Length: 59
Image (cartoon, rainbow, N blue to C red; front, side, top):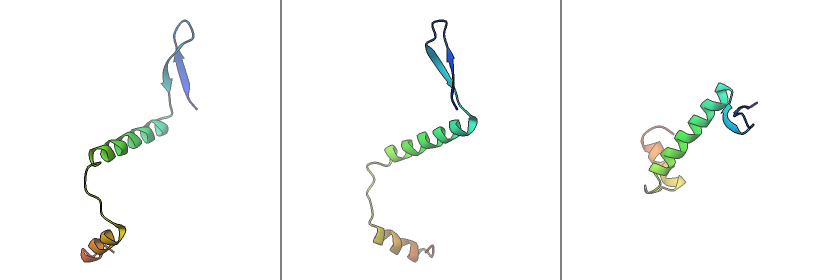
């Protein structure tokens, strides 16, 4: 449940979140940043990924 800090006119100025929600938001933000950084990297098909994982003994 969110709680808000308001100014003297009742305008929302800040929000108070449970720490778990805050940490989840930080994780999501980090994931999105990684996705943005890797956007231009070449992609591989699922079959190619499976081949590489088998070759490396991870599958």
